[in-house]
Length: 212
Ligand SMILES: NC(=O)c1ccc[n+]([C@@H]2O[C@H](COP(=O)([O-])OP(=O)(O)OC[C@H]3O[C@@H](n4cnc5c(N)ncnc54)[C@H](O)[C@@H]3O)[C@@H](O)[C@H]2O)c1
Image 1: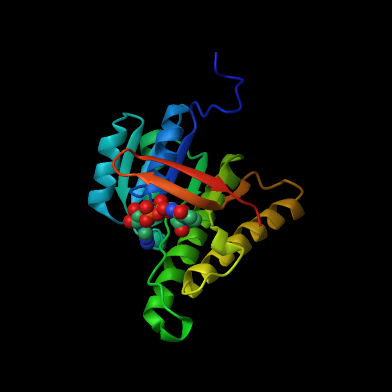
Image 2 (image 1 turned 60 degrees about the vertical axis):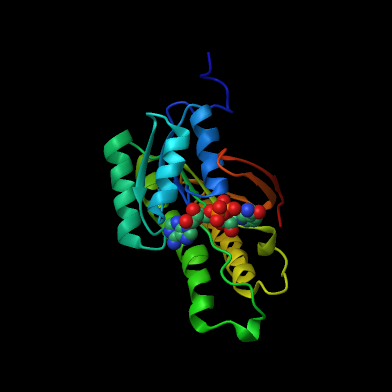
């Protein structure tokens, strides 16, 4: 009775990066409730185990990986295909705020680390998903930006720069798709959580969204 409901995700398979965190865990809960199978991935093994334990579903599996590591993420895609047979949705959610400091006091490493996770990691997820979805003929990619991707905040130079870059990545991918006259199947969407309230341990979060 759910086959024609566009809100349902029955038989869909999703990868969620940063699934050990608040929004990733809540997204996984929602996707499972809507009928999808999910591959949870995060670089933090204990958080990932905790998330999987909370979700407690046989439609859910995990893989520890750094989202900015091409080879590790290619392995996550392969494991997803081995376990579930396909990939329909990529949620590039893993992110970090980094250290909050005035721009002139940030070290090179502190700045680079934020860009590595928030930009390189999102690009890796988009790239791997797009390659797969081009050959399979369908799919959707969601990348998490932020209000900081549309405006700047004091002390958040690296985070804000990285989240602006997420919009650039998504818009570029969208243009590729448009200019290919929809020959490229992957839909590309973005979400900009504005305020998220986490209930520790519940795996639930509420969020607002904003478009640039
Ligand atoms: N929480 C908010 O209010 C808010 C607002 C705007 C945007 N966002 C964005 O939403 C996304 C999720 O935020 P959240 O609040 O759930 O954060 P969170 O800190 O609760 O979770 C982030 C998860 O990403 C994982 N992670 C970090 N770097 C990683 C890497 N290199 N490889 C794999 N996993 C990695 C962390 O281990 C963590 O489990 C982020 O991209 C964040 O920037 C959050």
